[in-house]
Length: 223
Image (cartoon, rainbow, N blue to C red; front, side, top):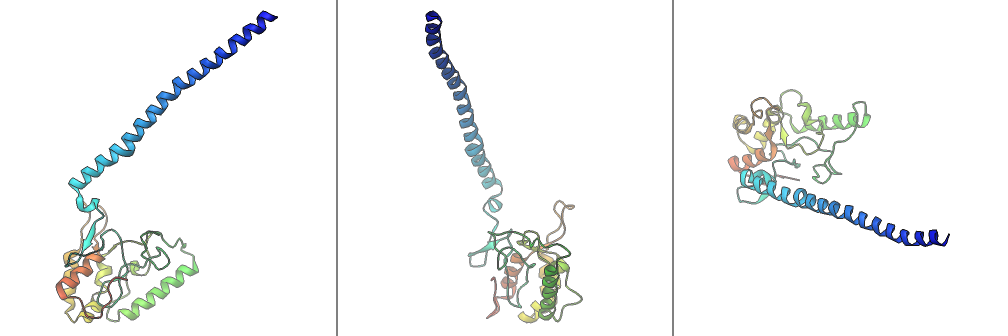
């Protein structure tokens, strides 16, 4: 019995030591693999792709920022912003944030098609559009009454922009045909000729209005 007990006392520490050694043997490669993966995918790959983007697409890589004629950055081509005043094109309504057009709270209203609140909002928007655009022909396109899924859609369809032309032309004291021509000049076609729909960027359009006709005195621009 003494021999058996002595053997157990001798064997057990050796077994624990072997277990620790085996654990250490398995742990080191795991740590090494995690470190290599972190460096490659968390540092090297992002830096490599950022460098390529800066070389090939610097404008897009830096946020598609837009500057006015004085060189001051006034926004991004990718984010809608609210415009007030009769002399500017107005974008789609926005449900992003409490006051809309909040780039830190991109979202839709999440209201379903049977929602009374959504119906009331659309009715109020339609009434406001009709009052603000007495010279417009026909009903406004539905995009001017409803918010986009992100609340930050920077584009309008050509129809959505052209519907606003009479109001803008009157506010600026120019012929509607001149404003319409500007919309047509800035209308972007389908990507690769087949993807998406023709569209016009509202921010670029309003900057082009000021560049061509001058900024109207007392007119409110971006909210």
